[in-house]
Image 1 (cartoon, rainbow, N blue to C red):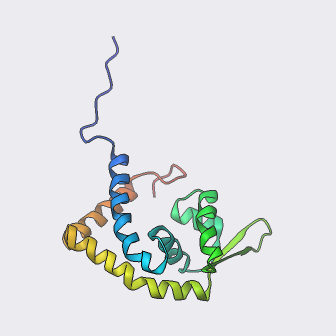
Image 2: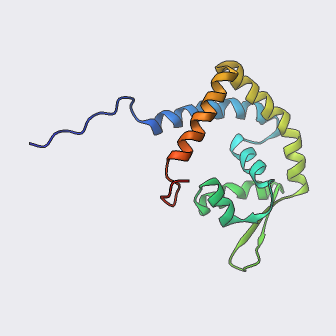
Image 3: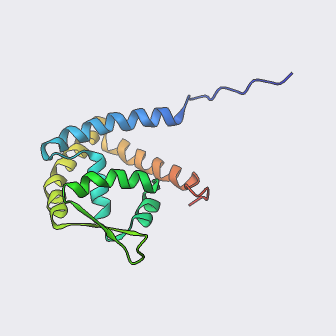
Length: 150
C-alpha cells in the first residue's frame, strides 16, 4: 500500500510569502499614493533607471516573463516616465527612463524611504536586515527561471 506524502512542517511557503508581500505592499502604496504611483511601478522605474537595456535583458534581470513586464511597463510609458523604443534589432525593444521619470523618482524617493522606515519601525531594523539576508540566501539557493542555480 502506497504511503501518503508527508505534510510540510510549515505549510505553503509561497502562500505565506505572497501574504507577506501583500501586507508590505499596502504600507508602501499608502506612502507613495501621494505621488500617484504604486510600489510595483516605483520598483520598475527605479530598476529601469539603472541604465538602458532591452526588454528581454530587463525581464531576465527581474526574472519576469517578457510579456508581463511589457504590460507592467505600459502605464509607466503612458505617464511619460519610461521610453520603449525599437532596439538595435528591429524585433527588440529598448527601455530607458525619461527626464520625467527621473523627476518622478526624485519626488517619490522620500516617500519610499518613509515606507521603508515604517517597515523597520514595525519589524525592527535588525529583523529587516536578517530578512534581507535570508531572502538573498534563498535567491542564491533556488533555481532561476532557466532552472539553473545562480
